[in-house]
Amino acid sequence: MTVKPRAFKQGDLVLKVVEHVRRQVSGPSKFAPQWEGPFAVKEVHSSGYYRLVSVKEGTLTDPVNGKWLKLYYC
Image (tube, rainbow, N blue to C red; front, side, top):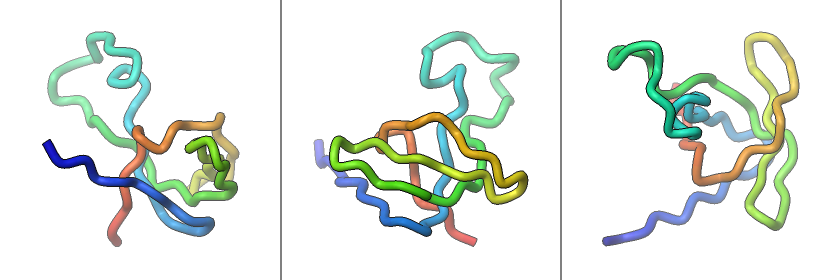
């Protein structure tokens, strides 16, 4: 299995996995979206965590591990 390193820099647009997928709980339905966003990366921490800002609302999210993010393509 090939591992793709996920490194984002400040200002990148990303999508975040929804909460019920991260917690491995059954979601509202099997057709519910698996990703939410877009978010802009505000802070990058050396431990692999990122602070995100919602593009639409401008709100700051809790720190999230990079393995739960993927690059957003406009």
